[in-house]
Length: 94
Image (cartoon, rainbow, N blue to C red):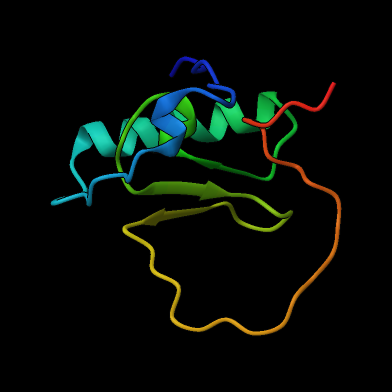
């Protein structure tokens, strides 16, 4: 699979609401694989499909154990705040 181009802010795709994935098809599986390669090549730990120009609800995450592929994820609960460094691959600060 090929590495994908990571879009950077203020690209309008990054501001749009991503569409739900109806079925985890072969193209979605290939997308997730390419996203993992792209994320690793950029030394990232997470990447969402809109960041590579695909307006779908697909996210890949790798924090050192087995990589995760999340399709149509939802936030069930949240509490508190955490302050830390920003690591978003689409928001360049230099």
